[in-house]
Image (cartoon, rainbow, N blue to C red; front, side):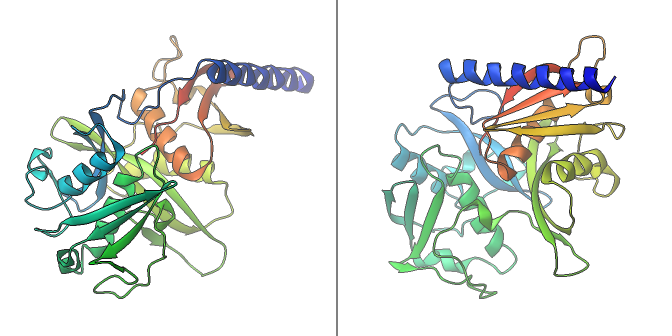
Length: 310
């Protein structure tokens, strides 16, 4: 029996590696939106009605990286013409009349030089403003970090809390931070993407949870997605509570997840709800340096999912 299980697992790993080879031979266009990526569709991080920085679809007109960054900043600025295109139920975060005076790109880092109006942000929103800015701009494939300046001077502290900022800001700044700590020892930070709903529109909310845990991050992700609706009615998960992550394996740039059959929407067709794979994929992309997630049920490979960036 043990030999049979080991053989099945080896076959599963080999199958995943073969798929990875095929992916490398026939690369797929990077997916940035909820479903498909074209030059005019993308993602913007905005405040929702519950004050979460949220991942929202947005239509762009820009053709070049520099123009796209400028358009993002305009859309993130309160009462800017571009921000008026924002979907109902979401709002921009940069103070009104803030201007992007200049930008420069060096490698994968962009330096943004803002007008002094940026400092007029209110105390409750100053950290969320940075989160929205960082996460929006780093959805761009060529950019993974930013340097913030105001009137030519580097922004070293948040205006109100005086929290010291790193010289280079990236997604390690985290987002929608929640702390559930019993001690300052053995702290794990895990960013998890939950579903939320505004009218008929489904969108995703990344939440960085700080906990005292010895668990691997993928275990925390699955546990949290199974239980989210029990403690926060604003966050949704379609992952059934009976779902179990039996085991997992990191294969170079891929992550193999093996579940029981409760992850399936329909046992007869071996389908997983699309929103479940999106939530897991997005969460994995924030916590692991992998390109692909493979899903299997009882060591039977179902399909693979390209990670969605942003």
